[in-house]
Image 1: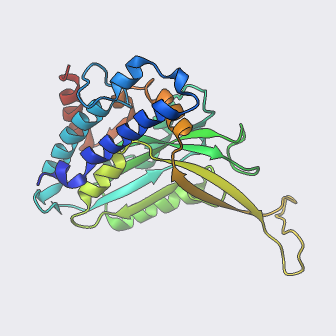
Image 2: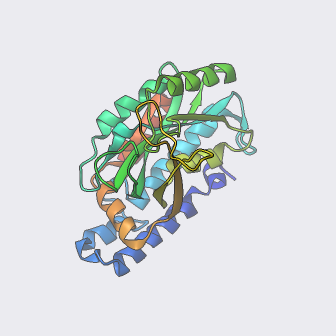
Length: 285
């Protein structure tokens, strides 16, 4: 099997396209869906390359997987890596917008890629739909938002160097998650054989909605705990669940405004890898 086949991306994206069509048919906001929206999700449609287009995502994903396998694996059949590779996630609340706002992806990418300076990487911007935010979260513009963030495959750095980089980012407060107490940067070394699975996660379409709850903390006497500014100390918890029909339609509407290539980030050796995948996509009409 090829790197792309091992990833399971094809079935993953077909399933999400089918779920979106179902949402189009039954959602209460289905009147906002046009005939061209249905067409843009068909596997064989080649007319558009927006980020919700299933056909485009599969073409790009297959080409990118082929390039990743050739560059990072000494044995593509068994996906044996020829170097250390890390799965990195970077978050910053400055990349969150109200649901009706037009996302400024150029700005978000500029913010997030700072954490990967000097590394080789291939990444994609992903969006999380927060459908219920409570008071005290780092997002101050309502109870719902689209939170754009970065998932990337990173190499050209040692484990100790990666740990140091992530620690520095989190310690500095340079990147803040939406929920207080969570870190803005995460990294994990990819185990041998897991590269296709990591690629599938980086390339996936959004699948979940997120809800945040808050619980105030109390001392042993039952009094609310406060910080040095007199604010009540709280614990925040995040839960996820599969997108509901209306939520899926809302996500589709924002994603169809963006080209698939607008979501791609790369650096170092990763620039060559994504350039080839982009050429493959642009040559498909």
